[in-house]
Image (cartoon, rainbow, N blue to C red; front, side, top):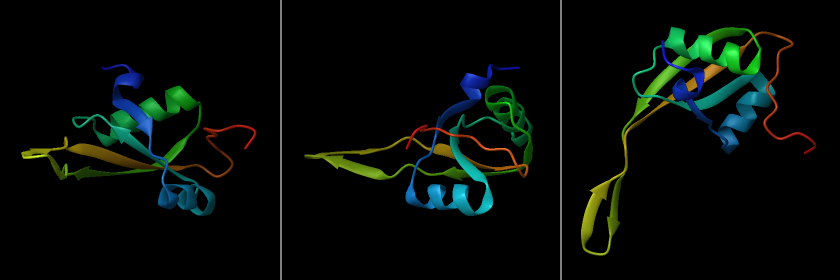
Length: 96
């Protein structure tokens, strides 16, 4: 099995994910493209010492980008929305 830090790349901090965190106790993460829901669940529970109720994943296609006359693509990525058990919280920014 891979290390938890290889599976969970970073938290996804957007307006929508902030609202989901406040209203539904859900946290969004950018995860490894090959990670399964079970691996994501185990990695979040190990890293943050919380219990996970549900994991939803989605594969997102990279956008087309242009720099001058050169055309390219951003990398494809995978997003996971993790629902935590009642009473469990993950704080990324303390004191704010």
